Image 1 (cartoon, one colour):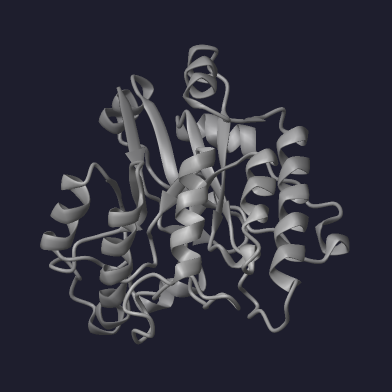
Image 2 (image 1 turned 180 degrees about the vertical axis):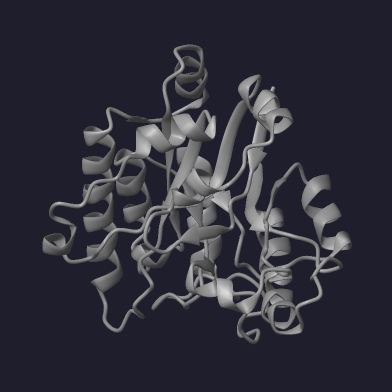
Length: 282
């Protein structure tokens, strides 16, 4: 049995510190202990300047053991700060992969390259990560980079993120529609991921882009972090901000009927504004 969860939030200073302060429900802990539980969206963003990362320690193995998770989709992004020139996204992408590898080596954690790796790690009670990136900005129209990423261990690709790629892949759900769904570049990236064996994540995609992707893909897809737009909470400011990031029941059914998986996001609709200095929605 496998349980898939969507984190949907990140702690600015330490992406795992919430585990230390949250009370653990023993019923939930018992369920997690019996399953292959994987967090589908867990941010570990590292500085793009190598010197800023010197001396930083990430107790990843300890935090994963505390959480009870079998694995996480270890996710980073390259579009903040905003990209301004060609090649910048790819440079950030490679640097982030290098720094992720350092974190994993320091914690004696391996990449999961296939499902057998995940099952083996679960059997041996060892944490494991699925390398993930949020946004295909690094491709920049050079499709061969997808295979380079695959060979570096990437197995989970979020097609879009908050800021548009210099070579656009499709419509972002928080922006006005420009393309009516996916672009040709977006379609090509999905096809290449299908060929290689990289899971496509449609979080941050507009409904039109999601539907286009479902027509193109010949493999299951995931929306790693979202929620239903019928449950926005009572905080009006938060609800207004979150509404574009959520999907309708009808859209959720379209994804499910296509064999897709939706990671349920704790979308902070009822979180007071003053908490946003600690939590940020991705």
